[in-house]
Image 1 (cartoon, rainbow, N blue to C red):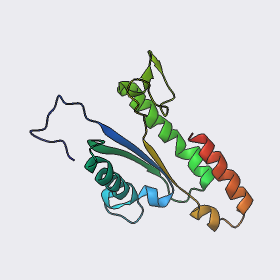
Image 2: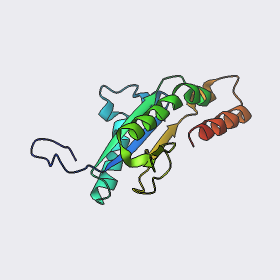
Image 3: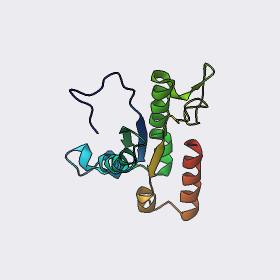
Image 4: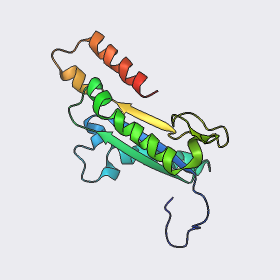
Length: 151
């Protein structure tokens, strides 16, 4: 759903917040417009699901990717953007504040039960496979570290 002329401006919007992090597909390589890329298409699919159920009014999404990143590179270069989104949502919205103290942004708020981010989509692995020095064990280690960094 799109907010436009004639919409109820005083009605609080209930946003589903989605963040994608990863490598070239998340960056949108090969697409003229981001709405045709993985981020835009994924956000539209989430909107079709959660908005049609009446759970949310719209989907807001952030997509952070760069071509060539391995799992370690995603952790080092893209995860900081994830936490910047969490900080922005926490700062500009009361949804993740409890008793005047900000939470880490990904926990549920006791009053609204709304997390700062509802879903995180992580895409990685292709560049690890293409790296001749990468092993299954090193990939496993990088992914484990990456997952721990976004918890």
